[in-house]
Image 1 (cartoon, rainbow, N blue to C red):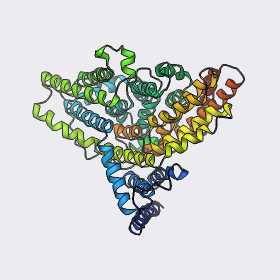
Image 2: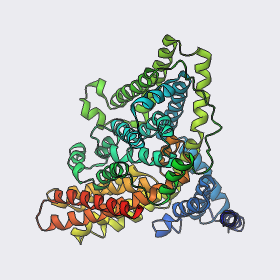
Image 3: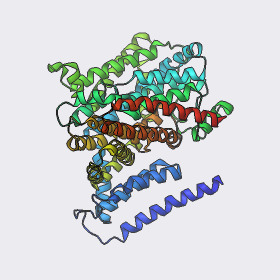
Image 4: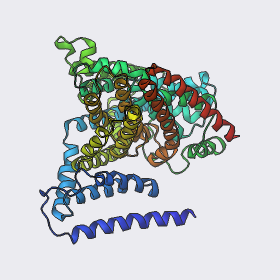
Length: 536
């Protein structure tokens, strides 16, 4: 059966590629400058749908993403061969790799990979593993420690994913926690935590998207109503403490516990050189670089926000450029780490230099997928997907009590299809502000629904950058991470949708909408109890 499914998957990929090539070869030769027939229509969402469907069917993300990109290029150019090539490569891939924000993130990834390699070679990770061996006695303790570390690193989701993964992998492996489960914990403590943390790059983004100049205040008021983020944390804690697993994740966990198979398949990171030196390292060899990285990244972000030019800390963080700040902060932290290891005599200078390309090598899968994901987003944007979704939301303002759940659902779909949270609530927040007056009790609920839907869609999407980096941080097969996380994320999304529906009804009848949050928590715990009973 497996060989048959594999054969069918390959045939599907080949057929898609042949169809795409045939379409380009026999196209009528229309110029790329002609307006796309698919602009601002439901067809604008087809490229990411193709990429996501193929990724889930074939279990191969690179070709799936590229076929989705190719489909977007064909639709944009009205099936012109020349127009497709230009749009895919010049506007898409080259455009993504020359964007300042994207380049900053890629540089940050490479530097972080180098720091992880340095920490491993210095023996910091092994020393932390030895410490954890003595102090963390159970699988539950190891998972709770991963959650705690993820919640503490709330500054930025990119930083969170890779740092938590590199620190907690040895501990998770010791207690036979599957890489899929570690990836879920990393992903669930990345965007869901950042979107409710006032001092984070996400708070800065929301502040910038708000139209009335009161973005930071709006962000603070929205935190108690960000039901998806809050319920995700409740669900994650419940899964660990109650020892509940369901769906494909249960299979991965059984393989890890019973057979010691942490990957439930092949380890695509197996060829990355193991540079761990276990006899020299101490726990400080891990903690010092991580603490330096946190401090330097915070300083880098407030520097880009004008803190050293007279702005106060909050405003500087709200106005920061996360890409530049993380890049500058990580670069300084790398230098500090190397100086520290030289003083400690943990390794020679030549060994430290050889760790840099090893760190880059470890980040290659994430960089490649990110590049394709950004390119696919560019294809979707060029087809007017944002405008199409915006019109849908604006048409729903006549049924206000349903507006929170509608905004949440639209945010989920848009973020899932495009793989971007920030772009999603960047579209929806101004629409909600213009559709509802500030004094309307549902306005702040709908603002929260924008952010919650964006995080939910981002959490579910295979082409999301944070989903990709959670896989990279845990060194887990990306498709395995997506397929095991989806049932958890969808379950939380359904309960969040019910909670937003309740909040909309409460707001219309004049009852405090915050009552919906404890109801949502009760529903989540009841769901976990049911799954626990079925697990037996």
